[in-house]
Length: 264
Image 1: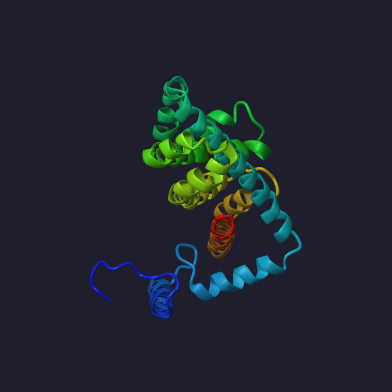
Image 2 (image 1 turned 120 degrees about the vertical axis):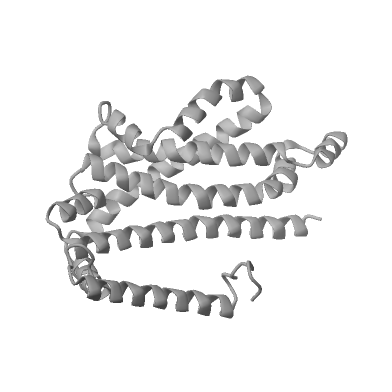
């Protein structure tokens, strides 16, 4: 593989390289834990796996994961839908973009922790992660989709106007295919950010029955293996959520391409 070449996600060689990299990282982690010999400071992989196994068989595990997942997913979906609508409006009406600009700039520049602390004045801790995820997702999706809408082919738009193609057909055949890379990029960027911000909101707000509360409790009692285990759970659920939504988006576009091919 040439220097700087991107590792393929689908090739056998790319998967083998990633598996080897994970194995090396675990080995380095294990050696560092053995040299430090302080599980409070750095738990070993075996201790974390043991703690993770105990979490998986606990009676409250699924309830805790669902509590956080439902709120973070809701905040993400609300932010994504609202950003999509306002991106279309901003592309159509310049005044909308101008009026939204201060809010987008403030959201991008303000630390997430500041938003969390401020929102605790107005919202209950149980619903805090929904609003925080909404705030974090909105500017990312809005910016990507607005750029995609503005970078559409003018020639195709003029052709559609010339032949008076109906709005529905124009949307399916011309607009949505051109937005594909921007939509996928928005999904991949915003989902990880939503989970980081949502869990951070739960750690600060500490709503009962949330993953953030469990992370905070593990930190208070210096239960480092449990802290690592819950962090791994967050990563796994976040990745699964991202793969599911991105996969559904790719499936939609494959179905759309097949439909357009049939209708030719």
